[in-house]
Image (cartoon, rainbow, N blue to C red):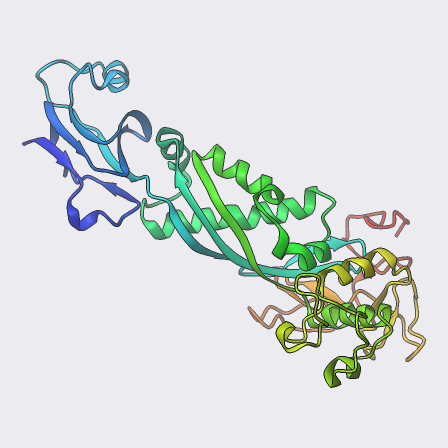
Length: 358
């Protein structure tokens, strides 16, 4: 049996990619291919993209299918087999993305910082052939869930690479992300372009850092402004001491809901030299370069570690991962750099952070 008319049914118009069901039937030479508005049709054989058709009605023959005709040496008046995909050219708006697990990022201010981020993005296909070529082998099924999941992973990996490959620190990202535009995410934009996709919008809506790091951050900001947390809570902030530059109101004003201004955070990062971390034994804030805590007298180590199974960031003293239940290493049995406190892998002869011999 052969097929002489190919089009996407109205019931399937919402799908990003629709594969026409040939059911092992041949396509007749001279068949009609109808392509609707805001979509394109693609002929594919054995995972290779051949001819692409825009909106309109097309007669499938050797003239309208030059790539497939040349590639498969099709004969006139004979049926042929290939896959036909309809690809939507709509601009997909406000799709959500999120980091499932925290990512540990090195930071000039606080050393290692575990962050999670989430947001939204909008995109559309601008090069159907390039997009389909890149998708084959990357996803198992051409359904909306698999495709958007793949794109979300591209965004998450792009953010991680942006933080890794540039001078943008984790806390710079944390304090400035509301002001970022697509220009700040060139790594992600380029990845989408390489897939034949135009990234119309990419926004970070929320960035989460560990509670202890956030508390220390806020404490340093208040210290820089010569304020206390009670001053913020009780509304005793002196006029102009800590002002939201976007509306000119103090941070304790109801309009600002007690938030701390990004510009003040940035000033703090640039000015504070005696950086501190939290003692893993008593919780005191101590200078980062202190080997022993002046409060409890115990030797200080790194305050977090990573689960080897799910890579979740957990407290250094934790014995089991709270996410997957994996038993974690005993802090008294691991090799730790005596100079900077970094955990050393068994095969390493020198500390990867400070370079001191183990």
